[in-house]
Length: 289
Ligand SMILES: O=P(O)(O)O[C@H]1[C@H](O)[C@@H](O)[C@@H](O)[C@@H](O)[C@@H]1O
Ligand SMILES: [Mg+2]
Image 1 (cartoon, rainbow, N blue to C red):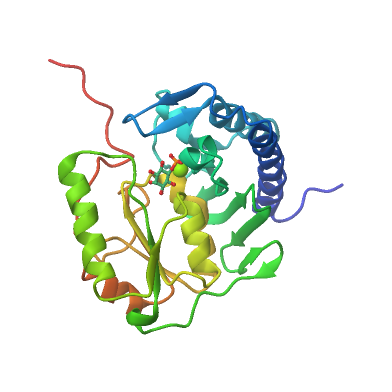
Image 2: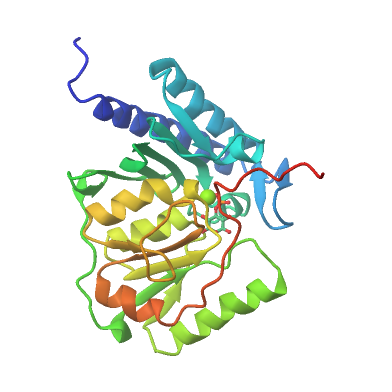
């Protein structure tokens, strides 16, 4: 069969297939109730990683390398093992094998297999597979956003007092960071808004914005692999992306606001405490002199 004239579509079709296969692996582990084995920690005692995270990421990367040998990767567990987290202009797969690992360990049913694809440092398409719900969220830049093939559209709400907001507590338990998280949460809740929710997965919170059930999601401390795939799903569903400072989203900054429109984004951003975590693309720690 001749190669399609649209190589990025071939890559996206592969991503959907391998995300679905990854979801089957995840469901099997959850159903066998052995996902709590081999739980390790990373940046903090509550930043978890399991053998399944690592197996799923290896499955995705090895399958891509065989079909697209010249492409690059940014994978959560590869970076955790020391791979660089640098987005070049080359075609790059940005992978979070299980977004919502803590949910996975506790059998809380919101885990997303996230595969984003960037060319010239712009996300071209994104795939987020909510494995337990069996919902495949997809978007290709300029061609719309879908869930299981049905078009997605953000909420039309412009009144912040009638909005639902999502955020996360993250995995940093530094008391000063926890204070900033609760300061923002206090201000947002007191507007008031209808409610605050958190799926336990940045990507699934963003998909909730894309499908119109949440008006805005914000978080400081996320990583590029948490948000890259879902970023294009939000914008192709008609949503907007911002930094918590109000500026343009910087995928490596570890700060994000994803909203249904500028009105809601501006109103909530005014309430947020701005603080920073180390950038994802920071230079590796220099060896001591
Ligand atoms: O499950 P992860 O891939 O580690 O990402 C989660 C993160 O652990 C959690 O603390 C929150 O930041 C979520 O928004 C991430 O998706
Ligand atoms: Mg994640």
